[in-house]
Image (cartoon, rainbow, N blue to C red; front, side, top):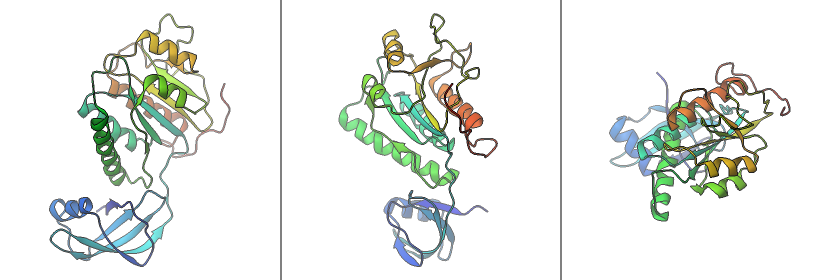
Length: 260
């Protein structure tokens, strides 16, 4: 049986005792029915993980004894920065969870012209914490030891300027008249260590947004002749990249070659 994994945003060290935060304690007590002396794994996102054992289970509190540090990483060497347009709550949650499982290194929610989600600054702040919790839960499940970086929701024009990666792509199916038209699988690029991919909302990108992205060195790619839902497009693109350049299938490091 696989050991329970718990994330704690605190310093961790061998041979020390810590009291888990309220969220983790509630989950262990009320969902998993944890008992004293139960083994588990704890990590703090700083790399590696620790074996631990439950010491005390009280009404609302759980204390654990940290034992040994395990220097293991499950991060892909191919760094994918997912720029995902804001979509409806359940779809955005799904994308966050599965993108984390597939190994993306960073996610930025993007406010686009046709996105049908209108959120105030306060609502966006609450959403950010909600998405952060989804990423934590996903890391606990998929055995990642480092959380993907979650950037604040950013307006489309601003995110184009902030994207620092050398290889940048915008997925846009309606690019028949584009000189850069190319399908994702047929693309001949050879990224050395990562890239940025920009995914549109349910209504797609506007022509002005596509033009602006191209002016900011985003290359236009599609995922074939069919129109995919935004959540399908995002996860398909990440899976293709991880299979070709990351560790999704082969488990080896990405090719160290220059862009062509």
